[in-house]
Image (cartoon, rainbow, N blue to C red; front, side, top):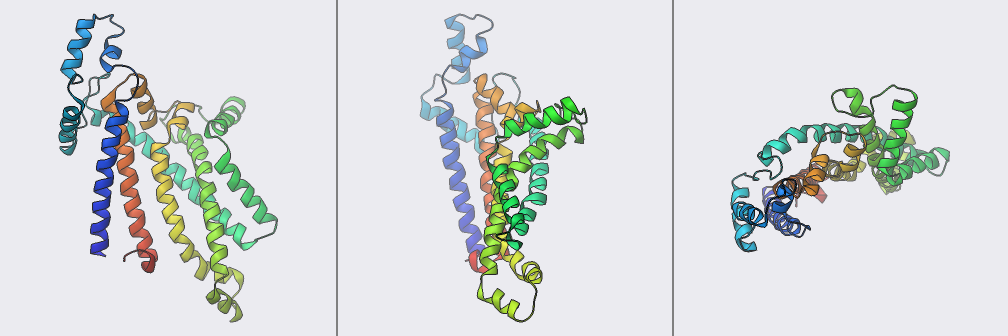
Length: 307
């Protein structure tokens, strides 16, 4: 186990370094000049823009910019926002709690609905509950988040007046956006649960258990569910990573604060340190969650993991 963990940590560190390099290069390919963007409203002269570029280090060769940025990054310093003139870590810390709360609530909804639909579809395979569960799973995976979000706002806020359409100050404001994201995330969980359970139910040991007198429900609950947990845990970790980095549309539709809104504003304002910080945070969580998912899958199924 220790050798496996050591290999995975080395791979994770190299992956983060590669992602950091790509983020640094891609951010600098964005059109426009950050110094010009910062001084555009004041109508500054070209000399003032050049002076600001020199102050920010944007006039240095790209390798020197990268070396300095990487050195600061290794010390835990993500830089200072060009637009807000505040530390990037402080800005991200203020917004990350909103996104994390939304992502965890959405994953909870997905876990309540997705595996239940998959179990129902596998238990009644080929019958109308299977077709209904499959239809709901496909709708969850294919309906655009902005469309379902606007539909919920129209129904529960405009027509019925039950829930607030915007904001993030109460659990009522969290309900609709988490449902939208949870519905989109439940689809893949339901499909994986159905496919995995059907494969397990066709295994020889399951057939033998049925021959000994166990009912289909007993076999499903006692034998099949544990084997289905491995792919479900794997997909759930990846879905949580997706939720943490993919809440831009939901936070925009429901006018919520969060990492997604911060990233959009930073791109529009050419705020390079904030763009880099948010991208690195998202990538870091993806790598860390992927590592934790691998370890969890190895614990649930040792023959497939800690080798």
